[in-house]
Image (cartoon, rainbow, N blue to C red; front, side, top):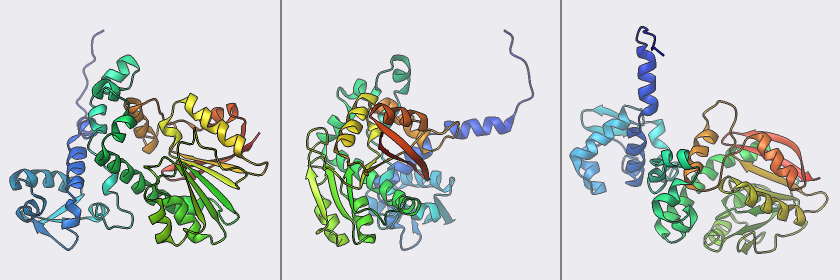
Length: 337
């Protein structure tokens, strides 16, 4: 087949080059790791000042900073001096909606670099690269595990804004959060609803900070912690609402169905299940589609479509009541079938 000659579409060329650029992603993650936005919180600083504060090589840092200026993450009000933009301000550690920990550099990026391996073989590139599965690798490396949990906490802060608005929590007496990490979601909801009681179920290392989180929110007397795998410890029975948020995305269908079946067995006749997960929606490259590619190389998990969730729930004995849009997530409400 002979390629047809056509006039060059420079707009398409520029757009393709932008989509293929990975330098911004790396520059962003590297400067997040350095807490660069924290040093700019009080106003503009020079590249030399920032290098001294972060212990980095000034000429190299300057070049990385200018890459962020080109994408409006930073501004350069005068040559060699930098300040935060509205986007850059979100990278401060003390910002109430800080996204600094959402942009991790290692080891996820290494796995993505071997996406070709996964596409050829259907096997997770992470295990191919590192010789063990993703969560086993993190569990043996506390610093990386802390980074991962920090990224999940950053997402929870953003998600809570919408979750609290699109769903009516006022009539929830008892809430069970399965895989709720440090209990941030439960603490926030319980602090807003004085009659709500909560039970957090997650691994011992995941819930280690939960007592502090509950105490700071003033809900420690209403929130209980069950430490252990929800595949092994009894799931509390008869609660009003069971929440599974950003958990099924890390599981293949077999594990997901096993968890859902265990929750169903614990539920009462009037209990509700809320599955809060990112979803793949048509041809929109939102957070769901991008995350699905990441899960492809990390483990057996996946981001599912609404139809795939419906099938999972049906197999586990649930009926779906409704699906609510919550920004980064969709909320699927279900009852026992």
